[in-house]
Length: 247
Image (cartoon, rainbow, N blue to C red):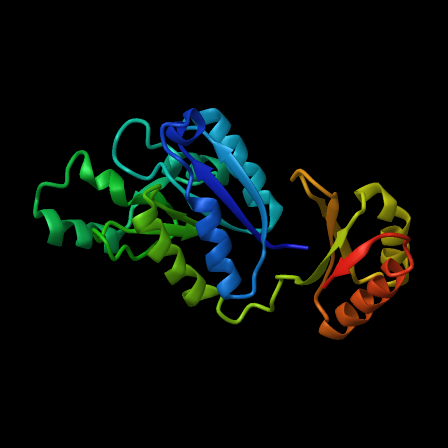
């Protein structure tokens, strides 16, 4: 099943010089549209690994949000890597050139023109912060690595292209089970997934000191199925000696 992916590009993220903010921001944005983030990949600025990651991503069929590496300095290789991964040429986008001309006059060659040189056939993503656009191609949407630009630009992408996409974000219901250990419930969760094939289970044990507890839950797309599954789970948990269930 296709879904949404996120690629975060930049040596500064991998080195720890910059703390990534794109993953939590993308999760929040996608949730506004009832969409789930299916996967995340981090990659540095080296050209060949970047091309390889983008080739895999283009082949996945997923819709992918891509941040970083679209400036005009030598370490900004994302545009060329995307073009290479797709077997396309880089071309100055006419509307992008017009934006640069309005902003900088004739002083756009030879360096600033790179800011709007995108794989052939790309469309623009408007940038409300400094007007320098990102670009979209093959269900991939490329924006700067600066969160204050990436956030509103990706919000525009979601509203423009995906506002009506059917939801992919699973509904969740969960409960805390005190005086218990995660392994106690493995057979129970296996039985639940067998009896309710459209439901996924999850568990998260506490790492706090004191009486052990486990957060048990179910995920699914259908509210009715989910409610029946969680009621079944609750009824079974009440039969375990000594445990206390907090819904």
